[in-house]
Image 1 (cartoon, rainbow, N blue to C red):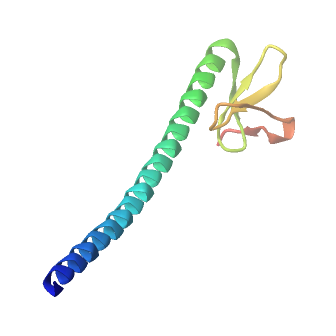
Image 2: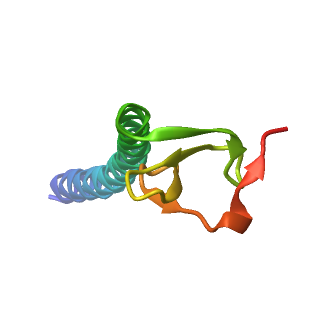
Image 3: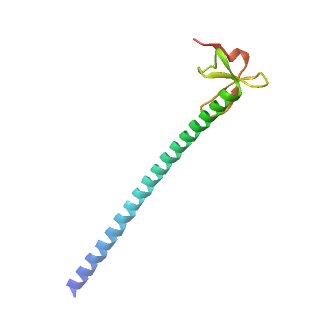
Length: 107
């Protein structure tokens, strides 16, 4: 009878250890999936911002005039719209309107 008990206890302990280790592996997989998901979201956001910026710059180059010989504070191209407002396109694709004091000569 004691051999059966020892075998039963050993089997139960083996099962318990297996379940605990599987739970630990599952948590590791969950954290890996979360890291990959975060990295994918970050990359998608960067690609989206770059696409928006390129699209707005292309449309601005066709629709508006380029202010030749001048640059925005970050060295960006300055555009002039139909209302004679000066602006540049930031890294997220947004038009940032400039004050006359912000426009510099190209170096």
